[in-house]
Length: 170
Ligand code: AMP
Image (cartoon, rainbow, N blue to C red; front, top):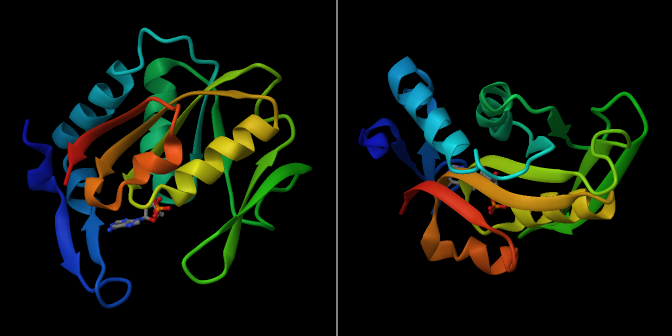
């Protein structure tokens, strides 16, 4: 199945110069969405995984069905002030300013093998921060699975040493 046919390019969103990869046509097709989830899950099916983690918001759309498919716990990584229980956090730099990801302190156990999931790997800043958050909590990142990789932004450079799998590469 040609999954890129289900990705819509939106120029200049959310700001001028950004070509936004809109995954909503994929979400609207149960066949394409199911195929993508099966391929993403299958790529790590033989690896030992204790949990699947993803940063809000679009990462959840892919991580949740993968957690069910692989029969693993799902751990949400969220912006400050969203998680109700005690959290671990990791602060990271953005192009302008900074951001922070939080995870419940019981989200990932010591030595747990964690698969990270997102919709798009762009500069890799978000995925690298997610890796650091998991590692600071004592977890081990087994891999990073993304639907779309914008390879010209070289996000993998931020993820050296991690196994990165993408289904669609631009
Ligand atoms: P990154 O630059 O890799 O930290 O990307 C940050 C987040 O923004 C990713 O989790 C994506 O969901 C989103 N993102 C970045 N660039 C794009 C893009 N061109 N189209 C759609 N989503 C994007």
